[in-house]
Image (tube, rainbow, N blue to C red; front, side):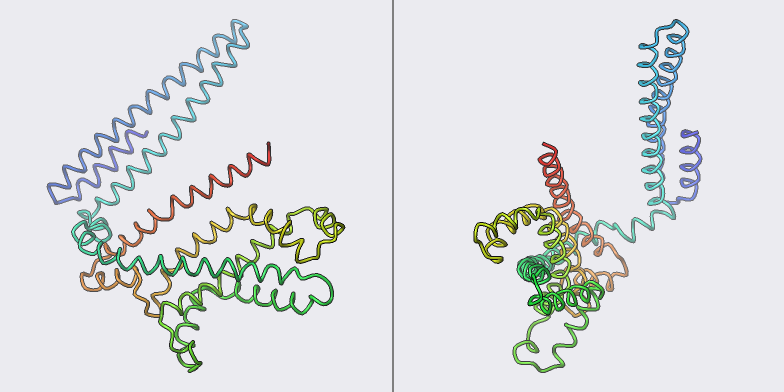
Length: 332
């Protein structure tokens, strides 16, 4: 069935190609996919062989050996099934790129345009990195202040808690692009000293900080709330004040627990720096749009996407590693 699907789909796409070079590429893809399909067939045959062996061993009352063969057969069958899905997915994607004489590839992945725009896009991407780094530093500080304010104890802390909760709920409810638009175009109209004369980069930093400090505040709060109440009680019984307990006993533990979710939030912030083009900041996306509008092609925008992927995926894997290490430490 897999071989038939590859032959039918590949043949249909190849018949619609007029470019001789693409016809050759399509033929090689069909050959490679058929070879992969043949490998899947061999794996399926081996799985069937193990299943038959398990049946014979069952009739011979060799129960343990039969169970072992059956388990190996199931495992090989699942591997063949997973490999089949992978081959089909990759082959269908490559055929999609070849359809209509490769128009999809020419629209999004035209090498010449990607190479011409890469230098300017990478230089503009430095703006995204700068916005992300400065915003992250401010978010760390303001988010911690908001988290502590939201957990202010007693009746005296009620007004502070109310204001912190109101701010966090408001900023989490409004989309980041709306905040960017309001800050970027609203502050210059206010004629406020210093604020009205800031550059678009600083308007972007302010907007991103206002938005993400609310999310980070909740991350901090979850870490603080996860510390057992007995530690608060023990510290207070030793004569430490609320602030001293928070500073020396609670926050060091809480921050260590929330490092992975903080990193995840900063990855999201880093990606949202691409939104700053709405207020005129010359970031990588804006630079890519200039090339796209002049060439009527989106390959330059694909360069931006590739840069974000290259920068973001290693950070994501690092977050996963930190989470795995934390879980291992807890289990230990």
